[in-house]
Image (cartoon, rainbow, N blue to C red):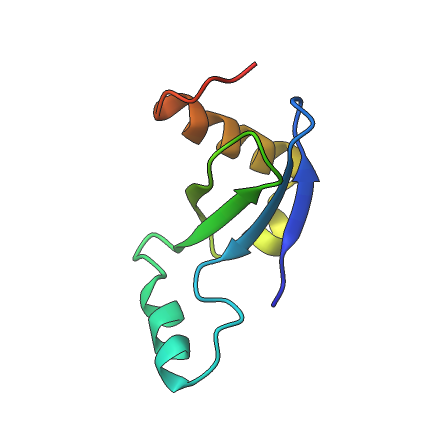
Length: 88
């Protein structure tokens, strides 16, 4: 399972992985394919090391290789602000 780790300005370490990644079997592979939208995005789940709640992001299918850490941090922050999480 490929994942990305990064630390934000609050010193929270986030581990981000595409939904259904690492789950085995034919059904899981089909579910992962179905999560890709017509716009070419996939659901990415980012789990914090603590002090925050998990966030779900819609990112380009190439997010793992082409989305910078700064862009990923900004997407996490925007999602947290959108749902009203306390953010420094």
